[in-house]
Image (cartoon, rainbow, N blue to C red; front, top):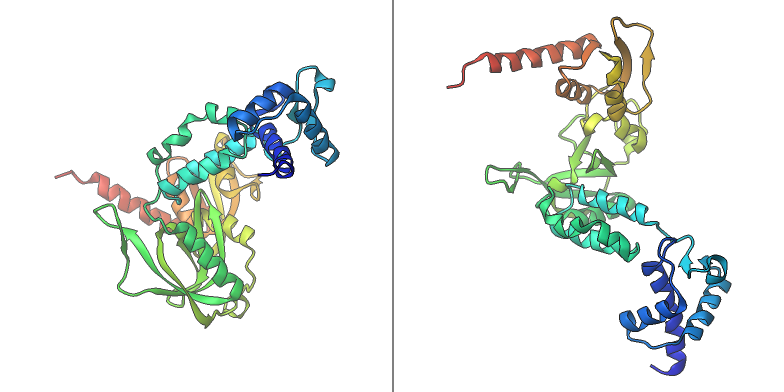
Length: 336
């Protein structure tokens, strides 16, 4: 590289050093920056050259705290991401069960490059991504790309929908492939779902993305959501995911539930704050109105059966009563 080329790339190296090795708790002197440029990039420069390049970065609009201001050294005042923000992103990736262990590791390492080197020292568990619970399906990222393409171009998709077998591996649910009109991809409770119209079901269907394989984008126009024979021909994904509790589809209902006052946080965790605490209630219990799919509320109520009582609607209460009766019958039988 000629001298001019070296000068051009040096300013980029210094900027990268400031991004990766400096923050308010770790300011760098000009000599320390020069040493890091040499150690990391194999390029020699002196203290004065570092100073000139830092001034050029400041003139270009980069917000750099200087030695003259703090009498300690230089650091990026407002990095693109703070270490705490990057840590939150990395932890979200590590906790995402819908990403394979291999992809989780790769993505976490890429994200760590957005932070200072000091963050990596505080989260050594990045290297243990394969120890977390993750899907075995390596096609998740490819699925997202293909489904996004189909949604954007309004074309049908065909895919294999799987379930786990006793060998703990994915196997096709049926001997045929699903053909679906694609509408949206949504993330809910730590999993990605694909929302579409499957003509064998009455209504919108949610498919778990980590259970989908062999996606094909067909050269067939998808039916627009607005043309489906539903009462409400609008699809607001924020509203839809909020009311499709745990992404269970079904009829949308308003339900009245009875809980102890101190359990209101559990209701907010699942339904958000779009709920109503009613004036009725007794002996430390309150009545709360929530809205969601009937199947989702039913499964949620069974999950919290010791803490929650569904008061209405009557048909939902009856369905849960029958579920509880079947559970009681199972546990009243002696194990043979």
